[in-house]
Image (tube, rainbow, N blue to C red; front, side):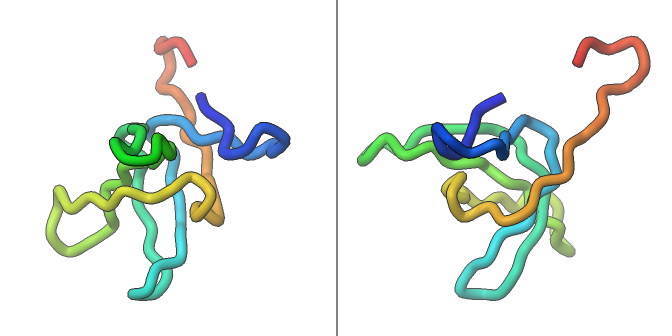
Length: 79
């Protein structure tokens, strides 16, 4: 799990449901991966969008994520 800012209590983990604001309006999806930008090293969440076509991803800077809903690990799986 990674924090968005050093003094921020908000944390992002794989599988979390997130919402974020874009130039196309608010979007939502599930965090699939966390990757650093090649140019400036900024951490981005790769979010699979809630969209009519499955498999559409968007790289979202962690600072742009406005809401996080934590996922619950299935029974028998370590958290």
